[in-house]
Image 1 (tube, helix red, strand yellow):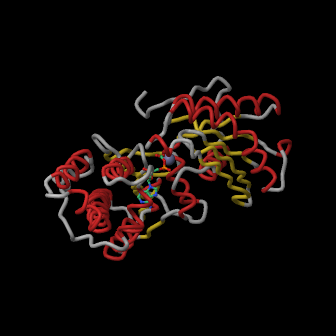
Image 2 (cartoon, helix red, strand yellow; image 1 turned 135 degrees about the vertical axis):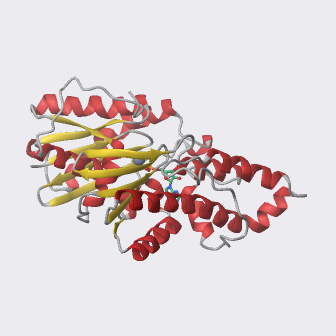
Image 3 (tube, rainbow, N blue to C red; image 1 turned 180 degrees about the horizontal axis):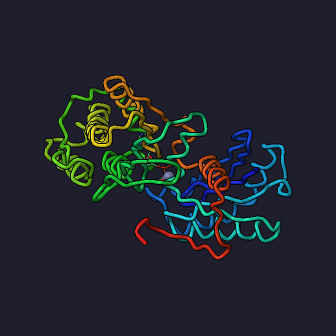
Length: 331
Ligand code: KG4
Ligand code: ZN
């Protein structure tokens, strides 16, 4: 079965081909238009998707050495995401399916982040996924393919959102997660103890207070600008420690609660080097199998949509041609 995957939920226009032999291509056109605004501007995102979607799909077919007439189904991100951005991908996918008379598969973006772990690995069920992205932070118990139980999630900001918003306070460009990661490698994680919220709750998270505490911490300094210039890497490392320690503590709780022997990381924040290290340490301590996607499959991509579509197609999970996008997980 040859599946074309399309992802357009936020600011990456992406397309990939996944067949019975595995991943054949993975193309991403990242939008740079948002940098000057310090965040994704929804209207500009959908226009940029519109401009690049056809060339991105064509490139993914070319790189896979195939063509549209050999595609058996199109898997497309149905949600969650920005409504205008989702609509571009969904309408485009419907057009392709109608013109070729092939089925469409609506893919949940958060599920796809989890199944990105199967592109290069074979996690055994049941497992617990720590799914951490710019919009979501969740602990998910995955009993078998597409049988998920949400153990807990963030009550406010997502972990990636915390990295990005704190980065803005520190004067770093959007999205700040990768730069905070790079800087924290050169800083001291013990430099300051930023607060870790909701430690008395097993599986839920809260990151909005951390952002405020970074702001007050800097404001309290006699010369905040000079202090920041001198200690930026240390602050980045301390922030990364505060975020990743909470994530790992709750992941450990989920392991104890469910008794799983396998854990996975998923989503853009799983590219974070401190989180990856701490997850490896947890796996060693508790004798767990750990799977973390290759960095290219952590942040938004279409390879994860294509592989999830392939898994769904094998189970006959095709969608209706009238499927609609959904912006949020709570419908
Ligand atoms: O999964 P993703 O690409 O998009 C969403 O579905 O939201 O995640 C993007 C998020 C951004 O908040 C970005 O700052 C964060 O992932 N991120 C990182 C790293 N790479 C990306 N956060 C921390 N360390 C990184 N290395
Ligand atoms: Zn994502």
